[in-house]
Structures are given as C-alpha cells and as structure tokens.
Length: 328
Image (cartoon, rainbow, N blue to C red; front, side):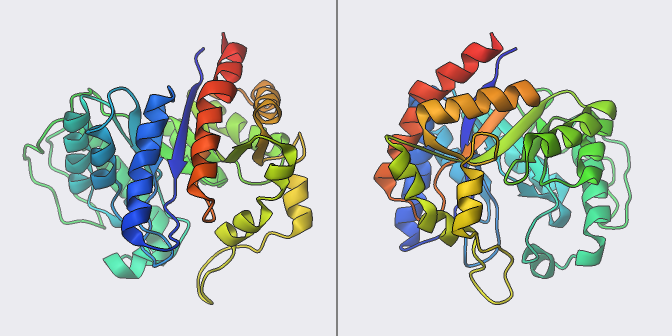
C-alpha cells in the first residue's frame, strides 16, 4: 500500500490579499516540486479567509505543475448546485490533464448558509441530496431528477466531461459519526480531520467507516516541521491566532499553552516538531489507524513564509520518504 502525502491550506487571511494569494499558488507549486502527491485549497465565506472558490486557485496551480493532484478542502456542497460543482471540477480536470478531485463537506462555519439562502437547520438533508445528484452527474446519469433543495433536473448533457472516469469524490468529516457512516455506505473515500483527541478516538471513527463499507481513509492534520524542538514549541502564538475566534459571532477555540503542549506529545494530534519527531508520530499513528493519505495543513496563523517553505521542504524530502517506507 502506498501512502499519499500532501499539503493543504485553509487560506486564513492576514495582511495583503494579493500577496496571500500569490503565496498560496507558490505553495502548490512547491508541493509539486518536492514530490508530494496532493494539494488542497479550502473554501470559506467570511472575511477571515481569502478563498471562497477553490477551482480558480487550483487552476492557477495546475498551469504551473505537472504531477500533483488538486483537490478542494472542502467544497461546501450543502449550499452549492451540484451541476455547477461538477462542471467546475471537470474543467479543472481538463486543465490539469486528469488531476482534479472534489472533497465535499457540510461546512464547519455558519457563514455560507445565509449567503446562499440555505436553511442551516436543514444543512445535513441538503448535503445528502446534493451529494446524490453530484454522484449521478459524475457517473453520466441523464435520468430526470427531483429533490427538495434544487429545481428538478430534466434529462440534459452536463458538460464538459472530466478526463477521469469517474472523477474522484471524497467526503471530508470533522468527527461526526453520521458523516463517516454516509461515506462508508456510499463507498466514497473519507478525509477525517485529526485535530484533537487520541488515536483511539480516531480509530473508532475509522472502524465505523470501514464497517459501513468504506475503503480509503485520509487524515487532515495540523503540521509544522522545524529544525529544532525549540522552534516547534515557539510556534504556539501562531497556532493560537489561527484557531481563536476572530469576531464575536465567529466559531473558534482559544488554545491554551497547556493544550498546545499536550498536542505536541508523541501520542497526540499535532504534527509539529522536527522531521524525525513527526515521522515517528505518523508511523505510530499509521500502526494504530492505517490510513491511505495524509494532508498536512501547513500555513496556519500567519506563519512566516520562509518557515512554511522550510516546513514543506522537510515534509517532501524527510518526512514523506520515512512514512512511505512504512507502507512498503
């Protein structure tokens, strides 16, 4: 089994938007250059984040890369028309020569629902219905379709068609048993956010997913590879800034120094430390919870650009080879 290793960005915004966008595109290019497998861009609809539409950003990366796979992290399918979602990602697939993926999710933030006129109290129902339609469109089903959250779809050719048949669709979940069961029952690969708790907590969710029929598991982790342990510990202010509530009505958590220190332990979730420390944590995690992909969130909390570049370099040249050896 080969473990896929990639990076992702949620595009939290600090400073000049144009400079931030340029750095996001360069991040995807660097990930390709150091031999990583996947690059993911998040979707948000609040002033705290830059990117509301991942496909144009991924297309910019596609134009400057030749191998790395390109995915959303995640597409908020609860509020979007599946026809447009399929068309956008099929276009990206054509631009990239068959490297696009869609990672779908329900949204961890309330902002998209009033913006797109979707009842937040019915967001799970809306997601399930739109996922069904997206999969039908992906598979070329032209039969009439009707639902409660979109106008009926008459038989029609939905174009363009993706290079990949089928275009990969993943489900992203933050820890909801219902989400992992849905992914397993649909036979879709699953990306689980591992941003707290223990490997035992994670394994319970993966066991649910596999029992429901799921096959491929990916983990999304918070990552920073540094030259020394001291540099890793000193990143705490950036992590606190990343997760804290930015506005009175916005979600978030305030990470205490004790919680930060706990997350750095060998049996906890933060993939922050030297390359050797992180590789060992991932090896132990893979032994406890076998996974097929890991996506490292690398540019959180206004980390300096040079620190992010060095971290991605270490991921590609030091951590990834050590982790891939485990799977061979």
